[in-house]
Length: 217
Image (cartoon, rainbow, N blue to C red; front, side):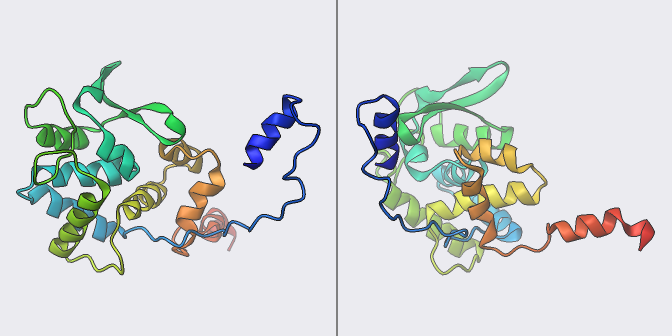
């Protein structure tokens, strides 16, 4: 709403913004949701890859290795798949009805091909009835896979894998800017909120500085 009033002000539709003096609740610096650890994520991927349900590996890959939101993964169709400049890609409709092109790493492409199973139309992810998987069915599959993998979490849900997507890339040394682009966050502070809740000290700048100055200390 604040953005709407700001646009009206810029376009001179309103003489002032009614939201100027509205006190808004502060956004916490840390997200309350935690992602999976590296070993937990590996165990979940392995359980999905070995699952007899052909949708499981694709579900985990789309959420955890592409960072898709659950509505984006469940809404993806076979005709959204294609090639662009030699890359396997998937076109998705994201937040704000924006269409984006997502490149598919080979492992993810194989997982999706497994779920497609030779079909030429329809949803990529299907439930046990053979129709489009929804967020509730996806959550049930995630919980079942977490149990199978021995992953202990207070509450397994799809958005946890989007957090894992961000934190794992940061752990792998991907720059904050590149992670922000991959996660399609408009503001880098949103990307950092995903990571701060872990209070991860492994990448603390103090270690970088100490290593850089090691010769003098």
